[in-house]
Length: 385
Image (tube, rainbow, N blue to C red; front, side, top):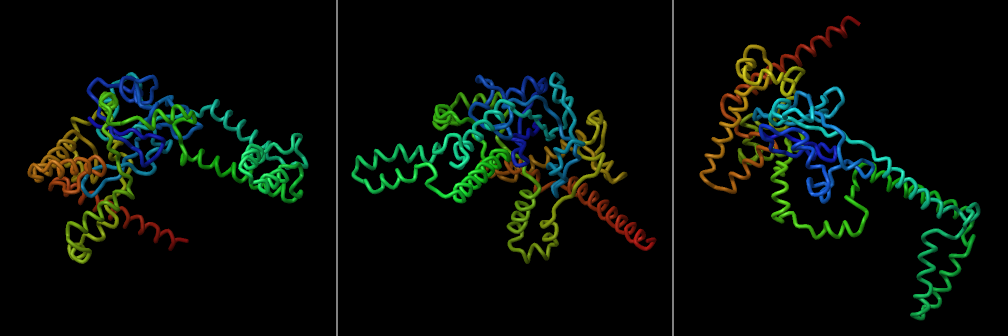
């Protein structure tokens, strides 16, 4: 069974993992984040920012119903990690008994007090060195002056005496006016704020600041048999689940290519579908289907009788059968088959069978009725006012 794990707390990094019957959080998922050769956190950045611990302190599953695609598959909604949709996973209980296939696991990250304190102290020291000379207890110790002091003998050695003399003048205490000193200090504060913003948002998220570690990782080959075997043992597939925006863009391009050009796609009535494919599910649907109904539930009967999309073993078997048919249509072309599997893991099916097509059609009809009723109630409410 394949499930997804959100790495770096990033909606664009929901990676697929294969789990076996007896796998638990502790024996499978948690191992990926461990150091000491058990996991990959020593050479792949998994934490959200440098201000977080490298190891999660717990794991949740997302209970958001999900987003139903045009192919009858589920991708994750942008709200999938909101507090009201998070349900804690038992680290000792089998994952098969806690998750639907394709469901999302959300690691719980703890802030690293050590990293935060170290960063704050370093930045305060740096800020102190740039205090204006007029108020600094130790004027003239800023980083720029230190670099100038090291550069002066170098310029003198090469006969650049005019440059050396200019640098000697600039490193004198109160060389700049008071207003200029305070101006430079404000710029320094803004510079630190800008750097902090990059680190705090994870835009800059180095695995380490140790040059030795960085050099070692730089020369690491992910194609190394040891690393490939490690990733395989962790169930790491390497595929990412796409976001809605990625799905919409990809499906739109696929639709245009399928019909030849936008005009033909428009005549086929597919432009509007491709522009806004699928629909957001409601409470009680999708991943909110009770797990104890996996083998007793009936997806296609429920959608016809109740207008709800629920998960069941029947549904997953249909997905598997449709995927097999799509692979058979590749006529043995390995590259085309790999692309089909890769796209299925990222966005689901693009060419579903009749059962899934009918299921999506019925669910979209329900959505249209719900929106019409909502608009009617809003209109009646306006009239009452």
